[in-house]
Image (cartoon, rainbow, N blue to C red):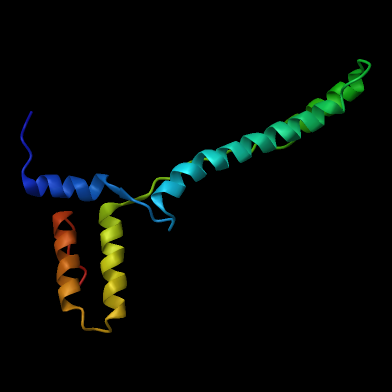
Length: 126
């Protein structure tokens, strides 16, 4: 296994590390992901039990088929996780945002943005 140089480690960190771009606290994200998945599952179970409740009682082909059609008629709710922003995108956004606030006095920030882009193998935008 080849040893990585500090520059290579930094480049890989920019590409692989992630930052929360949704704007919420990291601790709340850990709680909200399972909570939103639970809400979706709970809604699916409630809808399915309501459709099946219509088919209870004396076995009847028509009611059973109507309940099955109601069950299969709508798509199930699914909560999918989304990846956060890469560290490189986050740092670029942060520097651009900071430079915009400084009203053209941001040469130092433009240089920092150029360094980030060079580390990633991109051309300077300016």
